[in-house]
Amino acid sequence: MMPLYQGGKTLTEIHFYLGAIMLMAGFIQGFSGFGSVLLSLPLLALFLDVKAAIPLTSMVGVVLTVLLLAPLWKDLEWRRIWPLFLGAAPGVLIGVYLLKRLNGQAILIFLGLILVIYSLYGLFFKVVRREIGGFWTYLTGFLSGCFGGAFSAAGPPVIVYVSLQPWRKELIKATLQGYYFFSGLMVVGAQAYTGLMTDQVRQLFLYSLAPLAIGTYAGHFFFGKIREETYRRVILILLMALGIFTIWHSL
Image (cartoon, rainbow, N blue to C red; front, side, top):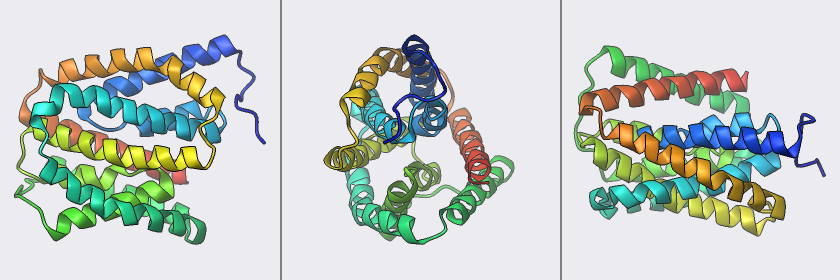
């Protein structure tokens, strides 16, 4: 079994880096509604065994959604969330199956290219926004579940889906958090069942809570200060950064 800590750092240094990463992750999630795992996981893997970093970020993700659901509770519309979650459930199982059999590098590069192309289109061309539902909602949830099961990256399909809707920014953010909460519970439950939630991981999780909460509420504070169109542009820029990072990490 690989050691939990890597890179020859002391426990004090690890706690310091952990706090700084969680502060940044909380701020990004509090401001945009997504991105915390994709920021924190590669940074945590610099000094933690990936088998510890993944369940740690899974638990952190659930806590983040709880912190954000409190101020966004009045904006939740459950009828928009349940179809996404129902579509994701079989997608997670298929994603785990695909992880074992397909070329994961090629799939991630393809996903990254889609995100970059969509973001550039949205930034430089007028995107026609209209209410999307029915089949497309279930398909989005299914694709999100596939990517989550295969690569622990469930966010991009749902983020693209909500960014195409003519919704106000509070509804977009609340829908993302509601979906992440239920899908995150499913992932954490599976990881706990397989024994990934060790005592050391739970201890690191406890150290993460304070900086995570501070960062989350700071990000949500600035979220309330920006205009609707600015928020949509921020989502597109973050999606493009996510796509570039996905391609770079795959190569």
